[in-house]
Amino acid sequence: MGAFFSLDHANIMAYVTSRSYGAPRVRRRDLSEFLDALAYEARRYLIPEPAFESWPEEIAEVAATAASQLRETRDFGDRETLPGLVVERILEELRSELSDYSLFALAVGAGEDLRETAQELARAPLNGQLLVMIPEQDMTDRNFEVLDPIPAFSVALHAAAEWPGFVFWTPTGASAFARLEHARELLRELEHGLYYGRPRRGPFPGFRSTAGFDAVLRNWASSRPSRNRRLLHLSDLHFGTTAATENQPLLDAELRDIVKSVDRVVITGDLFDTPNKNYAAMFSAFKHNITHLAGGREPISITGNHDQRMIGLFGDNYKQVALIGSTKIVIDEQAQMVFICFNSSEKGSFARGKITASQFKQVGAEFRTLTAARPELKDYLPIVLVHHHPFSFDVPPETWVQRTLSAVGLRDETLLEMVDAEDLHRWCLDWKVKTILHGHKHKARYVEREVNRGSERMQLTAIGCGSSLGAEGSPLSYNLLEWAPESQRWVASFYESVNGGAFREVVASVSPDNANRR
Image 1 (spheres, rainbow, N blue to C red):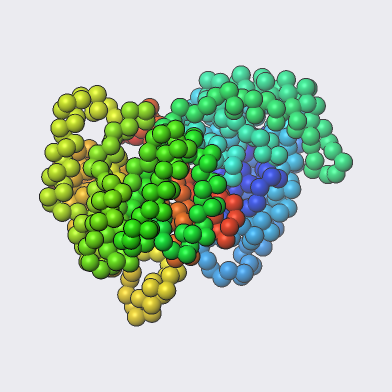
Image 2: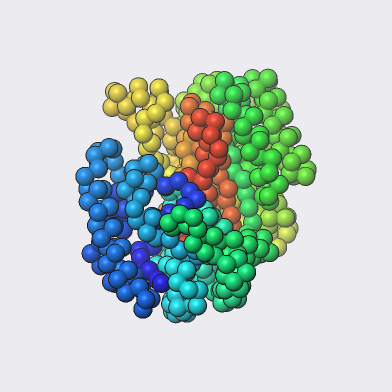
């Protein structure tokens, strides 16, 4: 059995073919397009086996009912993004129909060989238990962002460096990725698992035992560790606040395993809430704990406006910053990365930031000196760390300051922006630095923009982290960033915890395949 569908609907497909996970948030337009495609063009999108010729019409009828229900839904007005509970209700019957398989395969990447292999897999001798999903577009030429990625689809996204290929999963949640050249090998092992585990109908409709498939997928996944370089990105800790004190035990517990699995930890400013030696000591203890968990690899931290100005707004006090230490450039031999650290709070009024011309010159001179002395550093990935966001953006008014400003018709961005941010864009263009990590606005964000000067052009990626200790009532946040050297692409995962709940991957973003980009 097989199914073609729009790439933007891949996470919906992953959800309706799984019983193990809650529904993701879905953009209303995407859900409407997905249901209409199945309702009105089922024969185009679904490939039935000879014994199941009526299957497309059966799915079309269910999809039409769900589409009608979506149009009638008024729970959240015309909100662009529907919450998971609404999505779950609308897709309940369709999920019941499409999850009635023991095994699923999703093709990811590009190329005619991938499509031909996908159609071959759809005819595999698995007694009608395999459903193969084939996107109509590929994911290589644009940034691809997914809300609340279903874990099986997340596996595919995190394997972006190895595309084209297939991610296989079962309704119980076991999953594994196979490169295109290894897909048939994994399929043979799964065919063996069919007889070893004997997937069968269970005690209630729609149930199949998938023990054999699950064992094969877990063994395959564990035997092929990722070769990506991994960073843990934290920001805006604001030690000294009640939120930081209450939330730190949960973040500490979460980081115990994560820190051991990454190459380096970076923290992009607002380490404490106001210049105060006790608050600085709290951050230092936190940093020492991470250093211990990382086997002696100290996190790279830069400062923000709250570390240098009273409550982040008034005066200039560098005493506590001096005590915790600061640096301009850090070379990480293990990750083969060069971290270039700017202090965007050296100038700027209130919570605004600005990098001075003097600082650009000092950092540029140090960077050039290092690359001249060590030519191999030209092959390392350079990354700028800065506190303030290099591209302006607005967020819904959530804090009391934002609500107050909004009530009088003002944007909080006017008090938070990086002044003359274009100077940083040009500096990055000059030195061919294509990635900036930042914090400041307590909102995780992935942005890719073209910057230029004259005939020179470059895509600049900016990745922002939210508040890792939940400042001002925001979720606890951290980013896991994976860099694939061969394809030169980022996979950015944003994790959040709300009201003491478990951390969940709320956004996954895959950058274009820059190695093959024109």
